[in-house]
Length: 140
View 1: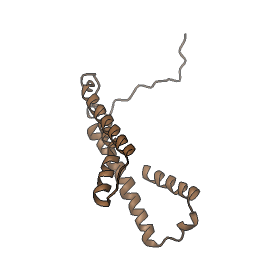
View 2: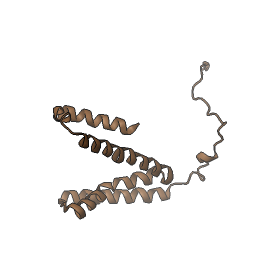
View 3: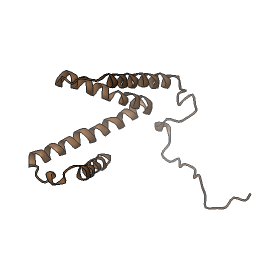
View 4: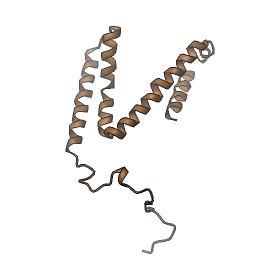
């Protein structure tokens, strides 16, 4: 569902900022490539991200996600001969250092077991959460 909303937003931005009339000039191959790109780039990307959050946790997943531009540049440099400016190298270094700090800080946090929190597989399906608000009035 997220992939469709992202694709619609991209299409809307293209129509506002681009030349919408060119969209209708595309042949079926271009439309097929755009569809394939949206499925592989957006849908599979979200699928892998959600699985990473489930398996690794949100902190480690987001830390690894912040170094994605570095991997993208590395592949572009290797396969396409792209060059990087000094500012871009500095930004990449900041991303790597930030990711390292995130990963190291997660190692110092108490685990769910130490905090007395139940893991999702330990929660019984029949247990209902208590409502925060009720429809009866509380006397002061």
